[in-house]
Length: 305
Image 1 (tube, rainbow, N blue to C red):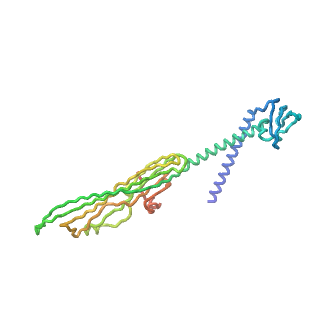
Image 2: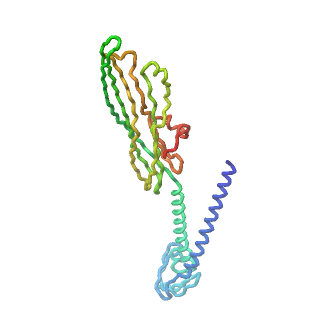
Image 3: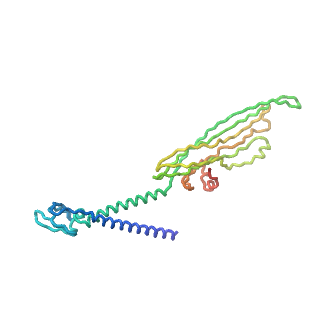
């Protein structure tokens, strides 16, 4: 860790040094170019300038050299050294100051553009998304009854044999809101999983003996979808499970169930899991139960097609 941190600090210092050299070179190039563009006031023209002390002077410009200027005013002629003037006034009369101040301004603009480009590049490498999920279920059931009359071969007695089949169906509905938390457009992978539990109970004594109690949820079905969002925008997607179906069979003989218990088989809804990923990395996850959010559980799930 110490070695990594030292390397990171050295790299940061090296990058900063290169950036400083780049800015210095840009400044010098701009200063050279701008110095040739300088156009001072004409000799004989009336000028006004500000001294470093804050006082103002007005008069006729009589002479101008790289380091001084001469002014004729009502009080007579006076010579002012370049550094006696305020910086804002020096940029008007002297090429060196004009080039320096203008080059600094252009260098600041250049640096700000570099920073903006660097920030945009950094943000482009940041991928952050969030999801929220609301869930509901719809249920249906159907009843089918068949009645047969059978004659007891030994006694000749006729009895009605009824078989009532009740089919229960449940569908899980998910409304998923995907939010892009970054300022730039991005694409994510949305995965959703529905889980079921086997149901097997009742029936004949032999059927009950053969039943194996297993409450472990099983993957019923899964899928995935690519979603693309603009920066700081939200998209809603609705997903439905395949129906979970259970069948209950009740048999009656002459109005009595006899020794047979009603037999129930099929699968029941055991919940759901939704993952939001970028390049295989999980950014957010929501589930109907905390047990589905564990890394061990998620890792054992097959990837949806």
